[in-house]
Image (cartoon, rainbow, N blue to C red):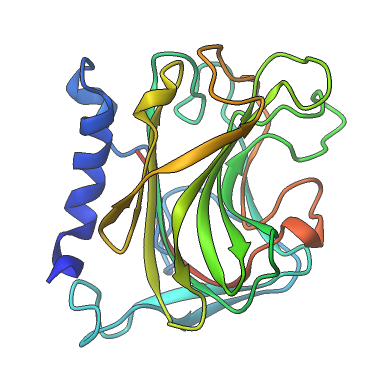
Length: 247
């Protein structure tokens, strides 16, 4: 049963992308299970409901019977995590391999709507330049389904040339409960992009500025879970989130 291998799979995904990297590339940076004892400070903003039922047995046997998740209302609710400073574990640039994974239960999504699962930068903080998306993991509405999305920004350019967006070809039914989703990528090597939905791989397409070998913007802006752009409702996640991890 694929559900029993999803969490070990995440490390394998990072290692697969980091084909010439050291073992450190597949080391977990952080994982948020939204329980009582989070190791990394999460600052809540807006209408967030904690202690919601997350993935649980018997359908999801790797979780405890009391596993909890968080519900975000899709109206600017999010968690923020402060970046510790330059060259932190949240900063990714060329040569760095990143794997982002989460369990998601989407309450509904409009066609073309990008809901943020997690991202760094693009918070609209006056302390940082706009369009400073270091990395982000999103789900994107597609006629009743949701596809996976990776978005980041490079150095400023004309139009949308500095944006680089990848969207998976496969999607998942937003009415079908919980799904495990993951994206892996090595910055500077667009051919390494890969996505997984419930353990099944999917390819996808690059648009806007297209694939690039240039480095993403890196600064000390915060990591946000569940929204972006100052809490823009159009980018805010509506539904339940659990077991979000960065590798």
